Amino acid sequence: MCQIFENLMQKIIDVNIDLSKLWISKNFILDKYKGREKIMNTTYEYMDRDSIDPELICSICHLPFTDPRHTLCGETFCYECITNWIQTQNASCPICQEPLSVDVLTKASRMIRNMLNRLRIKCIVCGQADIQRGDFDDHIQKVCPTTVVFCTSADINCPWKGRRDQLKQHLDDCRFEPMRPVITQFIAENQQLKDRVNDQMNQITAQQNKIQQLEDLVNDQINQITAQQNEIQRLEDQVNQQTIETVRQQNENQQLTEQEVQLTTQINTYQRENQELKDQVNRQTIETVRQQNDSQQFKEQVTQLTAQINTYQRDNKELKDQVNQQITEIINQKYQIRELEEEVARKTKQVHTYQQDIQQLDKELKQKDVHVTYMSYKSRE
Ligand SMILES: [Zn+2]
Ligand SMILES: [Zn+2]
Ligand SMILES: [Zn+2]
Ligand SMILES: [Zn+2]
Image (tube, protein in one colour):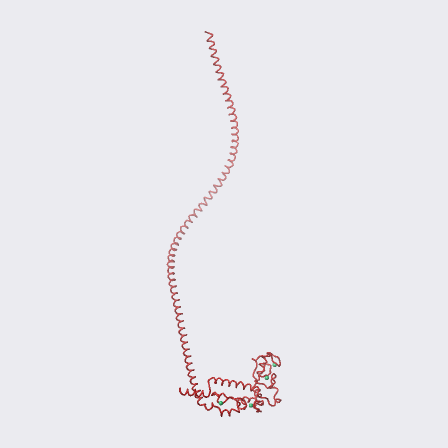
């Protein structure tokens, strides 16, 4: 197997192939496809143009329709012509000016398409005339001798391309065609290796996916475990809180029971007190009635006393007036008494003076009497 592979590689180097040519080959095919499109548009001309039905002519490009589309207003245009018109001119019909958009365009009927496909054309590339327009694609791909084609060994990487009428001569000289079995085997083995690589890549990818799935699963489980741990923690917290709450409620119940007992006692006390107060009130009511009676009596007494007081006040007033008169009188009498006393004092003083005079006179009298006696005595002698 290994030996075969090395041989193959050698042969490949001999014929000057490398892998990059695979890409070149692909690009050729793409170019070829694009070229065909171009050829379809530009490399034929209509035969006997005057006989073509004017209904089949596009009023934008003045050629028979290519991929015809109808508008809502009933006109028909080539698809490319009308979409270019809408995009670059304005969104209205070029004939009647009605608003128009690409979305509302519809494909023309099979009948019109068939009529267009039956139009006679001439290939400008090879000059062949009288080809139906619908067959021109086939003509270019399979018949037209001047069309550029690839070697029939392009699939095993022959890079040749040229006019179709030169292909036969190339095939006589082509170095790839004789190698087809070897290259085919190489390509097949290459394909097998690629398939194996792809298989293994797929397996790796699958295993990676599986690992990823397992990782996801593990992460999920970790998350679940974490969530459950959190939940457990939360429940434990809740249980603790409830235990605390229960203890608190038990305490509260105890307190309430005690309070109830106290309140019951208090209620009993109040009931007793209430009864006593009621009794008191009854007694006081009786007392009040009694006092009301007393009060009535007192009122009457007060009325009597008031009358008496008034009388006394009147009497009192009269007496006061009398007293005042008497006081005035007494004062007058006092003045009189004082005057009299003063007069008495003066008279007493006068009396005193007279007494002194009398005493003096008496003394003088006694002295005169002695002298007289003496004198008389002397005279007898
Ligand atoms: Zn057109
Ligand atoms: Zn219109
Ligand atoms: Zn041709
Ligand atoms: Zn070739």
